Length: 316
Image (tube, rainbow, N blue to C red; front, side):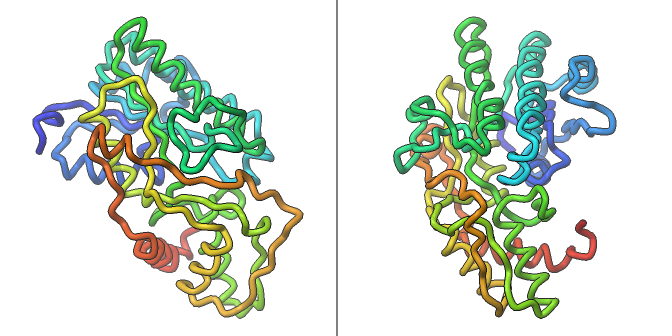
């Protein structure tokens, strides 16, 4: 175990969620014994009094803020006010209270949705303010982006060690497979597996298939977050990604092949595509705290498909 983690008290908001599950596993592997995960049943992190109580109960040295209201294009379009307000209130007051109560380090997890709709490829952190985010998820992206502004302001005025990371789209076992709120990979896996089992002749996929995306295996993302928590102390935002760009059309064909679905794919072009392209420059993470993704995309997809097939009876 690195001396950095020895006797550290670590709080992980959102630790009961998808990415949080990988983070907790890796903290345990590092020998961190004092990890506090605030459960939504006990702490509503949109409420100031619950944030106060949570910090008093946990007394962390490091706070890793994963908690977020997140979802795909459909969920963002249906609930833009919720996505703005809840994410803003879960983040901005919490960072202030963490500074106020002497939490030594605050690790803020942003979102790729904070980037402008038309960002030069690959996305570089210096492009972050060069336009407005893609409209369908702008309220979410901007609410999370305020944590970067806050982290830089608190660092400048108070010398506070708050860092801001920008993970690209995540995937992996234990993801959210609810078709109302899930992101593209778990949604496609569920559609293909269920259609195959029913003997359906087709699946319907939103959009044209033309946009591109980059995906990062959740286990890799957790490792990157912990490397940053240990080694990075700077004001600049840092991308966390795999450095691999794939079109939605190619992604669908790959998932169709890996799940064994034998029907046809119907593209519902009346539905939005979202941001035209997403692919990150990942050099900062490599240079500043030694992070590179190491899970091959097809390997990660196979693990995710295997997980869904093993647990589909338990998933709503």
